[in-house]
Amino acid sequence: MRKITRAAMIVFALATCVGTGLLATLWFSWDPLLPFAIWLARMGWFDVTLLVLLAITALGVVAMLVAAVATPGRGSQLSLEQEGGRVAITKEAISSTATRTIEGHRGMTCKSTRVDIRGRRNPRIRIRAKVDPSSNVGLTSLGTAMQREVAESVGALAGYPVENVDITFTSTSDASTAARADHAAPRPARMTTLTTA
Image (cartoon, rainbow, N blue to C red; front, side):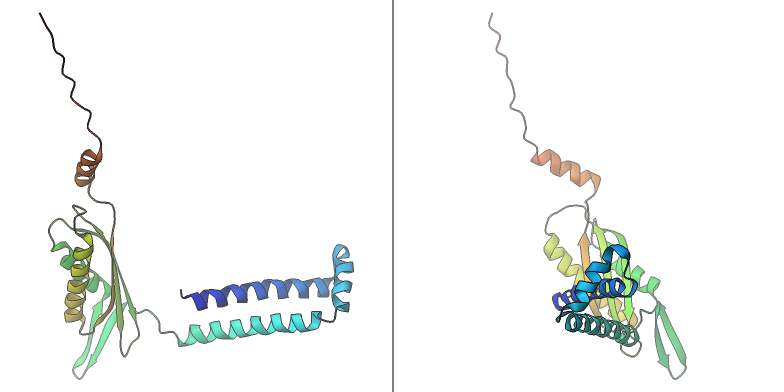
């Protein structure tokens, strides 16, 4: 989520909570809050503040409705309309292609993949993969190579370019973890006992 969107959501939430609380205080006027409600109603700035809060709330609701209607849904498959019919490629097919590409690297185990497909006319494909490497050597360059290869293989399969490939390296295998721990642990000095006759 971008900073502007996050800030707008915070302002919208605060305006909604404060505006609803003020309206509830005035409308219901519970006995403990009655003096406070009377004091608020007499303040000159109260009406303007309440209108501003309600306007922010209304704008936020309209913006969310527009975003919900205009945002393309996430499809469960790619559909290619052709003269002879329709060709569909499921998320599972895309996921297995990405998994095979990643595990084509020696020692790599793909723990999970997630595929998002947005849009119908010009689909945008996003792939997230969690990979368990056999070692922690050169993961940055290896991840870059995997991103490129997954994008190429899935693009060739689907016929559409892959917009984004996220590779997350998770905990390495037990053997390599033990080896790294053994290498990192300080080794005690050898004690030699000299016995004289």
